[in-house]
Amino acid sequence: MNCYVDDDLDSDLLLRLAGNQGHQLISPRAVGLRGSRDAAHLYSRVGMPNNIAATNGPTIDSVLRECDVALQQVAAYRLPPALDRRLLWLSENKESLTQEEREELLELVDLTQERTVEKLRARLVLKQIAEMLPHLHATQS
Image (cartoon, rainbow, N blue to C red; front, side, top):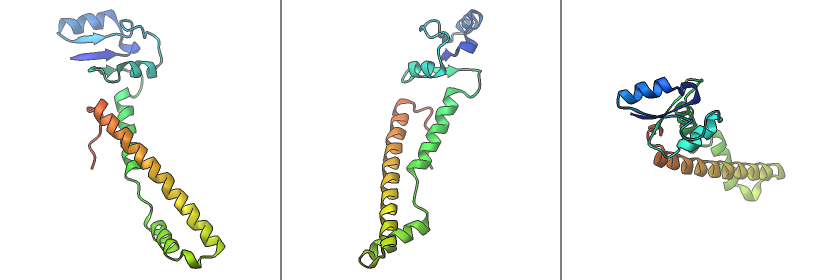
């Protein structure tokens, strides 16, 4: 097993014991990151074929999995049916709308355009996660 250890696990004894068992542990000292923020450790490992071991709270992998799940929810967003029906009715009757209904239509169009951009960005990031970190990419349902 190849693994990058967080500062909390970085010890000569652990590295030596793991090495004796045929494992390769990479310490933050070895890559000049001792005492760095978690984000620096993560950034240095992106695209590397190592797992990350940490003990101080949620693991980076678990946080990234949660991000993946949240992005999947954004990518799958659909307008609630009542809003969708209202948008359709306003669009079909735009010639006879009151000023208030025209404003509502414009606001709904803005909302759907914003959600569309968010969905596209989420899909792009999900694709990047799947390509760069396939072991983290949650199975899509």
